[in-house]
Length: 178
Image (tube, rainbow, N blue to C red):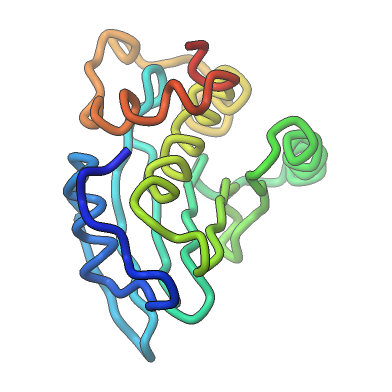
């Protein structure tokens, strides 16, 4: 999946590795934050159908990497139904976790243990997030737009990260239909 060198076995992945892998995937983070040895990046990703999916990557070199896809803005008073929906999706989509963040936003996360973290696994994790978000576009539309209707012209857009989808589509046929 990547032409970039991998991290040597037993060596901890550092922020520069993740940034190199993101560049190889054609992805440019908007922001990088570091604190107490933990590094986080914010990206906006596009699937084939779902666009502008804010995604946060959090690297703890000792533990691994967490990718959080922010599925929608904070949920209002309909939390009970939303919780049931998120729990059902946890069963429907293996290797991904759905939850509600502290601020009420529904999130989709994929975790990569430090021992498995490399360019290919990062690409698959991000591909899994956009692929699932594509699959759930209609079900999440009510959380995203008033009346649950996609804005005019939304489906006519071209995604900003086709390299990511091209690289992981064959390895995630259940999401990308290839």
